[in-house]
Image: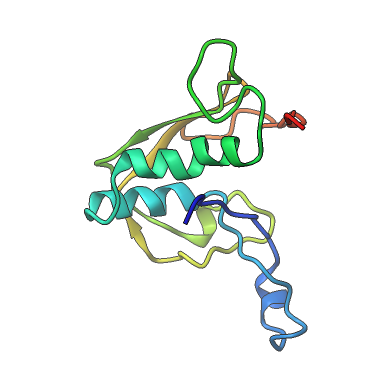
Length: 141
């Protein structure tokens, strides 16, 4: 397993109730993917360094991304500050997605995201701070 990623497919619960071949694929995971992985770290199933490697470094390396995936001078600062000891229970009502649900509803994670920076700008500190627009990725071809 070289990378860990999510496509974040925010389909509504009603859309997901269709029969298998009619239901859209994917799950709304962007808000819960990292806390779920950090919980696995707390359970001793992964090393924190391995999660960083597979969610950041390896992704940037695999896709030849320029100025991303590492904390380095002149790189884009896409960062999270986490509390590895702050547990919380996931609720559909806390999700910021328009689809309004998560497959993790009712699950307890043992780590939380405290702050998020996108392209060097603080965009989350317990509440959403404006738009968190990304930038086009640049690749080495």
